[in-house]
Amino acid sequence: MQTEDLRLDGNAAGGVLRELFAQEMTAALGTCAGCGTTGAIGALLEYGHDMGTILRCPHCNSPVLRIVRASSQMRVDLSGILFLAIPMAGSVA
Amino acid sequence: MNEAAGERVAAATPTPPRLEWRVATVVSTREETRRTRTLILDIPQWPGHRAGQHVDVRLVAEDGYQAQRSYSIASAPAEGTVALTVERLDDGEVSPYLCDVLHPGDGVEVRGPIGGYFVWEAARKGPLLLVGGGSGVVPLMAMLRQHARSGPAARAEVPVRLLYSARTLDDVIYRAELEQLADPPHVEVAITLTRAAPPDWSGYHRRIDRAMLEAVSWPPSAEPNVYVCGPTPLVESVATLLVELGHTASRVRTERFGPTG
Image 1 (cartoon, chains in turn purple, red):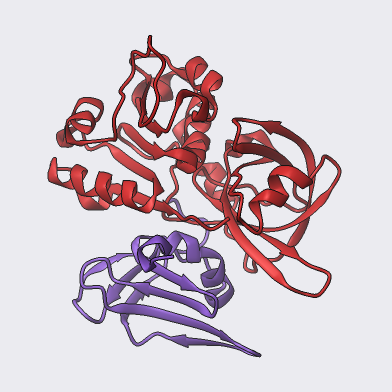
Image 2 (image 1 turned 120 degrees about the vertical axis):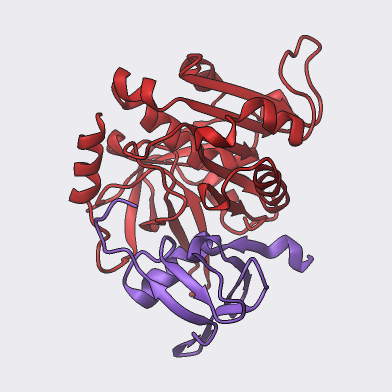
């Protein structure tokens, strides 16, 4: 299977992001550390594999968020995000 | 439902702090097409959902092996139960079980609702343009069903157009209901078939292209809210064409469906 076939988007990572942040995150706005573009987490490109998830910027393709499940840990690399704005629960998007 | 009521409903159902796996009970099932089946689920302590959201479904084998997939919710928030329409992928790990093995009364682990980006609220102003490919029509159906449940005034204020790409007429999910929901000019349904079409077919018969999008969509000045869902190549091509036609990228919300099964 080609990598292209596996490219989804941040919507598909909504469940694991809720585990991580205890908030609905796909409507949150993230600013890419690579190019400075701000957009919804749901609109990031997702490359999933057995070990975890990489979310990339749709503009510059930099990795924005990396989540890896190791035996007893969830390992998270947030260095690709400059800033996150998270809507509060219950607000109308 | 009027707009104010829509806002109250959203405000009354905040995202629960923890996302917990719960055992849902299959209430009933319905064959939609040769390859798709709808499961009506009763999920304990379900907090309610928004049109466009999905759930994660988890299967655990006796040896502990787990397989997890995401499935969009097809039912409108006000319906009370949760409907998932699942496409059977023959070499998949989860969809054949959901399509062929599960029966009414059986339990299945789900968590949700999940998603806040690919979500439409009745309170959102502006025309609603839905573009779907294959089983990507499922979350769009939740939006159409919610729209159909809003009052006549709200329906007149938010016209809806659905452009739905399917391989053949037999692959069109919810075909009878879509015919019923169509109510021009408030609700318009355009179907394009990418493979075989019946001799008397009066709809489109090609892949979605620029001319088709231009014919079906409102002009960018009408500021439609656009939702595109389907296989990754379709979603990316449609989103690119819509932006080329002048639509604001942030008004074009996308959800890619993968080949995972």
